[in-house]
Amino acid sequence: MPLSPQELLYEGKAKRIYRTADPQVYLCQYKDNATAFNAQKRGSIAGKGEVNCTVSSHVLAYLAQQGIPNHFLAQTGPTEMQVRALHILPLEVVVRNRTAGSLCRRLGLEQGLPIEPPLVEFYYKNDALGDPLVTPDHIRLLQLATPEQVERLGSLALAINHHLQAFWRSCRLELVDFKLEFGLDERGEILLADEISPDTCRLWDLGGSEPRVLDKDLFRFDLGDPVAGYQEVLQRVLQAVGSQSPLSLWEKGQD
Ligand code: UDP
Image (cartoon, rainbow, N blue to C red):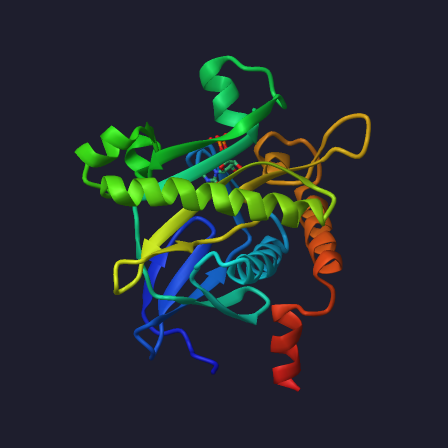
């Protein structure tokens, strides 16, 4: 059922979240705005909102099919999806299959080294502190989640990594690392939330002699045309999933 946006609950760097007439359902609108390095670099990537909304819809629908509970309900427009209203935990969970980004900067590691078994890290979502890396003991100290919840987040993150690696492989892309967010439903169950897109995943095409970056690092480090990169990811996802797209279902409903 189409639900119109009501009160704006939250406006972040890349999305707006609205309350709807149904208290169980929020509306999430994706924007073209892009930020990096804790918003020190700001810009816009034309078409990013549509790419991230559509890619996230496919990925979250796929994860639900694989038994990963998540907040996705339906894609209701090119840049709009309905999600379940959750209480979001103030943690970012990062999984790494290869060295890149802050891991290399912090530990002096070369980029692109395989990590086996994959690494799981927790970050405290706090802009003023610059989203610091935290241990399970820090999480307990700050009462951000219980030890049982931290355990569950870690095992969910690894299971999601397993399914996402297969998904991105079907798009001929390697999943280097990614960030997840989770929320609690009214029964206290942990559900995967937020988005899974080229903004939140490092995606490399390893088909050539050099890795080809197809994610937000194009924008962060001026590595190439981010508009073209994001569109290429969308095209690869649409090709991989075939015609069963949440957006095409929405478009049919508009006829
Ligand atoms: N990431 C994200 N949002 C953040 C921080 C990181 O989506 O606020 C993603 C990032 O795109 C990458 C992964 O999490 O896929 C690991 O990021 P990293 O810790 O290496 O930080 P970065 O290099 O992005 O500063």
